[in-house]
Amino acid sequence: MSHKRYHVTLTDDERQRLDVIIQKGHYKATRLKRAYILRAADESLGGLAMTDAQIAKAYHSTTRTVERLRKRFVQDSFEIALYGKPHPPRLDKKIDGDLEAHVIALSRSEPPEGRARWTFALLAERVVVLGYVESISRESVRLLLKNQQTQALA
Image 1 (cartoon, rainbow, N blue to C red):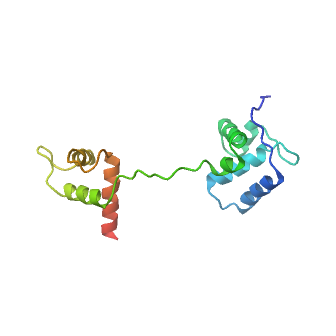
Image 2: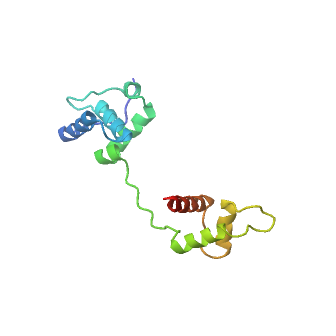
Image 3: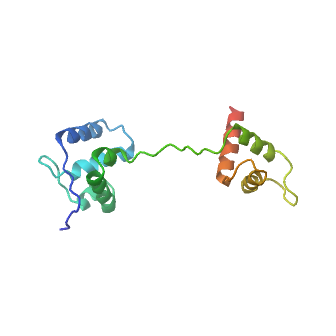
């Protein structure tokens, strides 16, 4: 038998919240799976106290996933174990209306000498060379043009 490093001991309130999530069953799949795993790992009185291998098999997961969830519960909190760590909003958005207009105009212009058409990488490189932005990935250019095309069709 393996020795668990992190022990999940749920309070009555936490156990009740997990039971509500499990009974309703219309939450995101990851949240629902985490609820099942935490409930199964509960070692308190009234908990299932299943082993990591039993939990992994019962809920179609891996023992490593169960271990990580136990660790997150103990080190961080019940909320973070269930909902995950919050992601900070991205504040450094590079694409504004002005840059979008330049990229669109450039994409509709004649391609560089020796090229039959513009590629996303060429467009990204050219907007940097022209000084419209400090750096931009070809994927950002692709998404910008895709969004513009989608808006034009709507």
